[in-house]
Length: 365
Image 1 (cartoon, one colour):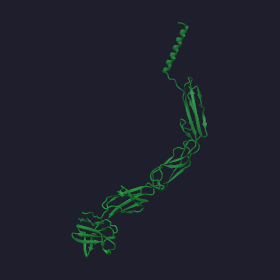
Image 2 (cartoon, one colour):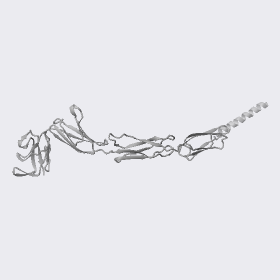
Image 3 (cartoon, helix red, strand yellow):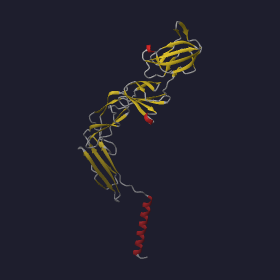
Image 4 (cartoon, helix red, strand yellow):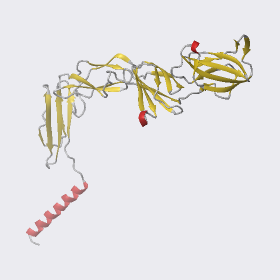
């Protein structure tokens, strides 16, 4: 073998040895870390004071770039890139962005998550997003929430911070809060001849609406009353028809309370119910008759009239005992019949209309 060929063979064996060694042994790559004082570790985020930056490069690096220590004192955002390489030109780098913000934010507005009602009252839980300006790091999220109690002079005060932790002056959001519905109760209906009288109580309400189903002129539902009263007489009804009324009360903050009741107008005795079995004296009630100034109530036991009375309102409380035409009577166990007629004009005129109603009831022991 010639000398030249021998040298080539030796060189090839050497290359193979180097390649084999590289396939079994991993070579370390330089590392770069950054440290900021004060923290946090990794030099992330904004700072509200001076910040010193230091890069640390592993010992196997033979060259570096941009890795000098730095001190940042003025407000602003600073970017630094430190890179390192070893003898085989294998390298690593670390990029750091450091922000300095010494100026506190200024809160200029508070935006609620819901708008007040027409009366300027909040009537349910809400949150407030405080907004403002911060030229450097920007305002951090600043919120507050409220869910009661009711108050006419509520306030939410927050001291908001920017992303660097600077805290601004307190900012106050003022409001009125009422999430309690009005108290609506004692809804009663008194059906009469071609009319229905409704009564209710509404505490803390500023307005009341009464709707009726079926409504007016063939409508499924109609509003038949709006106002602040506690009673209403519906005269646009038909006898024997069935109606459902819904009374809705609204308070100053827009809170709503509602009750429903049914009524069927017509001439009839309402109580006691025909055939009722009772243990004590009943309260007789009957349909109110328009323009009636009084009523004549007659009570019979068998074929004998034992009471005649002339109440001015469509009701009469019967008693356990009474005197009629010089005789003393008591409401003893047995069957009774009740009759009611309307009277018009003065009592002296004795002008009566057709019978309102009649019914039978039984007093039991």
